[in-house]
Image (cartoon, rainbow, N blue to C red; front, side, top):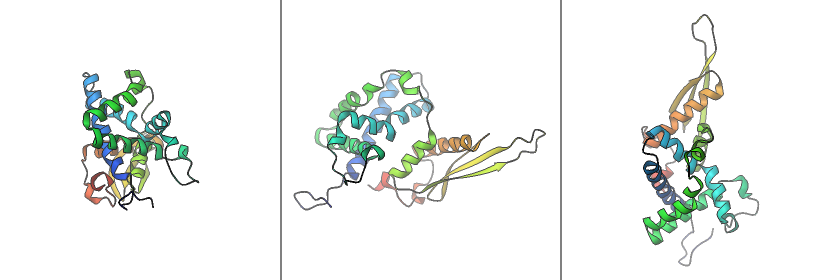
Length: 213
């Protein structure tokens, strides 16, 4: 384990935690001011598109952070979330060293400049299941979906599906749809909304990085 000059272990996870919070706050405020006509749901989807792991990995690579990351030789950075984590840690470090305004300026110029119009922010449908899996992996939580067939007592007897999104055994989102994929997407979307508003009991989770890092 790498240590600093004082002998303390070097760990970026605390900086990632702080950077994630600062990034989310800056992006939320910028979208709120930029799109006064949009409701909470639309703004949440826009923010998710900006701060998701795939986007942060891509932007970190464009900044050249992947060339500065020291990791195990066997790790392929392109196949991990390490670049995005490093970007969050950098934001946290800028915030601690230079303050909120400097961190905000860095985020606006380095990240938000790539999302200058509404079309860029909504050009692709949000994959709620992927976003939920990314959240669970980042916070070291176990995630799985329970999907069941539902046969309504109707003349057409069309098969529907009901899905539940579970984190560490706790159901945090439910959804239904005409296919398993649609049901799971709807369940994941519900779960993300619950996570975003802290509408469920986080104390039931085994790993609470967002609260304890």
